[in-house]
Image (spheres, each protein chain N blue to C red):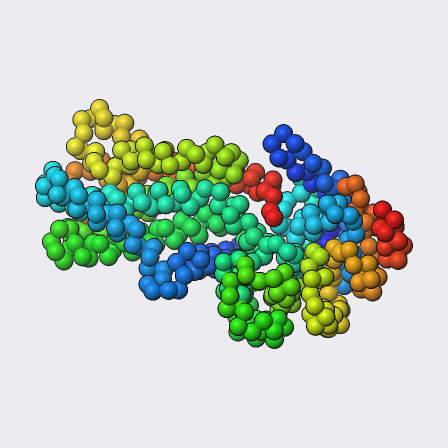
Length: 265
Length: 215
């Protein structure tokens, strides 16, 4: 009996991996095609954003702020925020746009969100790595002092992005009003994302409120992992973990409800 | 075996509701060929989508004890912006089949040649039908769901379908929504007429076709 259910779980996992793999490849070919650099385009946008905004700040504010390189600081803030913004943009009415895929029963609607988030995360990680290597070579970027902490921070940040996407996707199917508020919300979000400030630069009163944001906790971990003793970081791993778990549960319930009434052409 | 128990389906749009199916019961045994008859908008496609798991019933239960194809119809199943080959690759991946086998069968069955390198959205409905049939035949399901599209094919396609589906795979079950009464008379063992949300099963296909023609 126990052996049997273990077998079922293994088979289900097998189907899940196959579906995600197929969806990721399909998404990459439809979005980027096979011309010129192909799927490498996924890292171009985060790179351009981080590079150009970093350069702009460098020219207007000088080489350093609070003792760390301003280009590196802006770049490390901008890449995670592109992950968030792209993830959210890609989740809006994702079920309707992909509904022809629902003809295949092994594909579930959560797989759409999962595969798109995986693509965004991979793209941003590639951009991060590429930019890090280039900036380290020219001496504008620190050699990571604690790569484990950095990866942990990135994982929590990505997990929280996914949990927001899984809530936004079904909500955008339920109400069209939602779609109109998303661009402005993601913009207003920027100060609460920890992209351009570190908690230690603020007054203790302000800091306390900023640290309610799961993004800030993830971002502080990433920066501590990169700069080590050069910066003071405030973070709590439980904040992003708990917030993500709650949102994922809500998201799964919403997805289940939306799937029941989803009309497929 | 496929068992549909008390299926109801209702569509909502804003404050409007439309009850499409009311308490439909249907059992499909292995190897049985069932025709779905009904006027336009009666709910034939809806029932096929529910059986195929594309949409969920508002209430009632559908249980599958055999593998069921996706509904082969004018819409769905393919990604229009991808080429025929890319769609075949995608389907081979999710159904865990060997792509080169599928590719060989698709090339042979569809006779589309270099068109397979074009996006599916540029295909005519006849070409789509060829691709959809080729892929689902290559995967080998126990039950095929066919929503009208068999009619759009040319003579050559009909011959091929007849051989591959009705002769070589005579042991497979089939649910066919169609207005082609001759095809239904020749091929099906039983028929279901859907009218005003109710489904009535006929064991004699000829009586069913006559009843349907009188609607």
